[in-house]
Length: 321
Image (cartoon, rainbow, N blue to C red; front, side):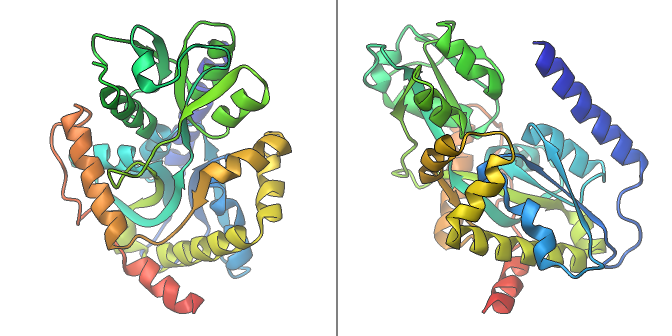
């Protein structure tokens, strides 16, 4: 609990202090830029942006612990671009918040974990169990999908317990919960440390199961700082291509975030770094938004076409070729 309070305090302090700085000034391609992301293997690309920018185009990468705080900082003008889960982006857009997805970040990355020696063999066996989750996240939706797919009523047949991602493993190891749904590296850590077992990875049979995260900016940033956003997206495309070709470099950098290299070697099989969103991907996001409404996470499906701006990745793709 103490660690959660400290992390929340630091995140909020960062949001307010950066807001006081006034964001990026002027209506041009001015740098430096501020980009928010997590310190995880699946959200790693921004830490490589500087390698693909001109010497006078400086990017400051600011780590956060959850997408909600990043989105708050972005809307406050403290960030120029940041990572987020698609569930967070869709929720924001459904509330009328001016977020715009400009490129992909990662797919997959999630897993439903149970105790290693438990008798839970399928999702149907979770009936009557206590499950850790974080409300309003992609993992929350995937958990609801797994439960309903197993014939379980999430409201009445299980006990959902709100626990932060970095505390879920300890809760499972101590027997305080029977399962958790989380993103990497926590599922792989549970397996590597011997207290957890992967019950289920999300499938893509509905067209949205592997969708995870993307990079977003705001409508005002696109209007006022289009060239700067283009530079960041182009750097993102190049960084993603590089990391997909050099797994060693990917692991080396991710290990700096404090995750054991053996765990990373396993978890990377459950991570897909990407940047492009094509028609198939956008169809999956539309189905994701519809399922969010059906599962009660949003009241209205937002304008999905207006939530995406593909012009930046199209130009970056031309430059890449």
